[in-house]
Length: 160
View (tube, helix red, strand yellow):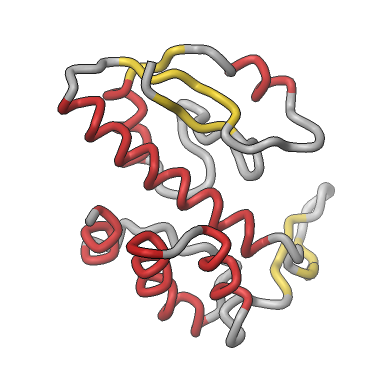
């Protein structure tokens, strides 16, 4: 499984919002969630046992830093985003096996206020290989190609 491979090679995304306990537990949690659970279970596991920091350092607009509360939605955002990234990687493997070279961007989750840049991507075709290369090279929330386009976008890809 790609998750174990990423963890073994230190390429698994480890959020700064995870506590020391969370950083230790996260690889096992995401592997277990992907094996026979879901993103909701993962989010619940991230919220439990002090796995998320209560506070985080944030940059101030005029320079310097301040401490702020980690959003209550942080566990959900992380779980959904990482599940989507691994789903896209799995879909790429299927596309490759079926000689499909492009994937189609779609809204996988409804959002209250979709960003205009996200709405503009719906229906676009994207090179499966370029997307996979991007996900491999850019571990974490934002990727160079913009898929997934930031936290809570609701976008993913599907076969044409």
